[in-house]
Length: 437
Image 1 (tube, one colour):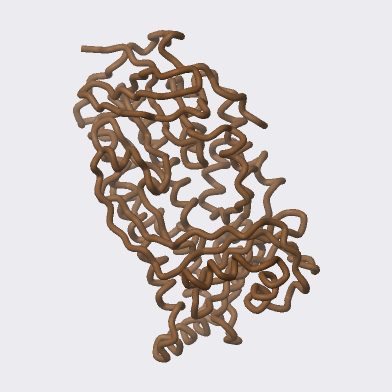
Image 2 (cartoon, rainbow, N blue to C red):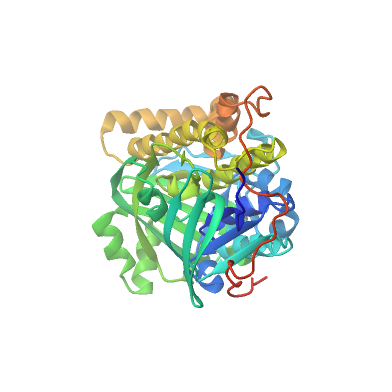
């Protein structure tokens, strides 16, 4: 039995992972709705920047986005890693990866604008802003999503709901998917500064007893600072007047950049590790922070979400080629198997890295500084560490879990909609707010 659907896929959450998934499915003919509770301006106006790994860069390149992104980004020729005042600094270079750059750095608004602009070129993908999901009912053949907008309330049917609605994901909680994890004793301060001297696109991460301190170079000689401290200290420092805040920051920042000028209000958020026990159930799949959340050390969070989106897009495209039901567990299981183990590995890697470097226990201090000395002079260890940090090693290690191609002997699942069923305008919400480019 086939039933008509309003959309093939509904993505709840218009952040970077959700939009990346939509871009990965662009041009394939699937009818996709992106539902975002905030306005288009609000969701793009976040004073944050992200370190993108070479693997994330390759994903954006495969989606045809890199030519638009690259001119507005910085590309790191070096990443310098150090432990407090220890003289042994490890310098990671592109040659250690065999890539053009160690990392890339992009502002949140740039990523949002490019992704939104690319999605706007596909008439089959519709973005609805200020659209609040009220309820989701998961049926055997389809899911029904009730959405409230400024025009009223309506119900939309779909083969698959993608939860890209953040760490506290109401969709995940509503589906009863349990999580594992813990709160850290630390909070993270983020701020944008500009140094007096040219930053030369060099990134720094220095570990202090309270937590890591990272400097990510941005265009126009600006820098994103990510500073991890115990909760009370982080709140107290972030509340200081700008001059005192910069003075406290300068003690960790170092003297390589001269005096600093604060360009944004410091933001504070608690550090936490969270991992969903499963990434799917019938008609529902978790993406990005809805599935996992890691410590900010190493800048892994968004990169994991981008890899989630690329993997899910690949799985769904293969399922479409095989004329399979996109929301069936047999399809979604392939995504879960490919991502769950690697994400757990990276989450635990960031946890161990933070705990090893954020303590005073002298045997640990001696051990970690010996490892830094070894990495400084022994390139194989340096390459292994960098491949772990960028996700390249994990991608190769865990890719075998599910074959790239869908097994043709696996029984196909009945498709649940007419391929060319027109969308009833009365059933679909009006596009709220035009996408800003």
